[in-house]
Image (cartoon, rainbow, N blue to C red; front, side, top):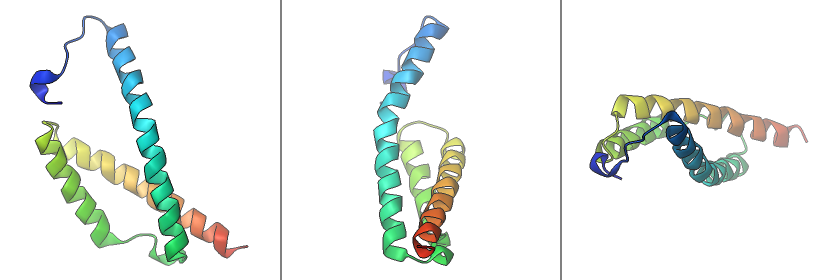
Length: 102
């Protein structure tokens, strides 16, 4: 959705309802990303290689490009993605550690 296609809201309740609807749409995508992370943990198996710095930078560059295409602040998007990637990397490491301790 381009900036020209984005709605203008008449009230905070409309804004909140829109945010709730967006969160509903995001959750299946986050679940799919979490599944990919679980698969990465299974394939890698070694907690020491959960963090792949070049891949983090590759993803950060890619989402900056996506942000520009969607008329969103690339700095904001990069910060959000870096936070999300850090959490998923920690999750991946925990999954590998749990598997290793069995």
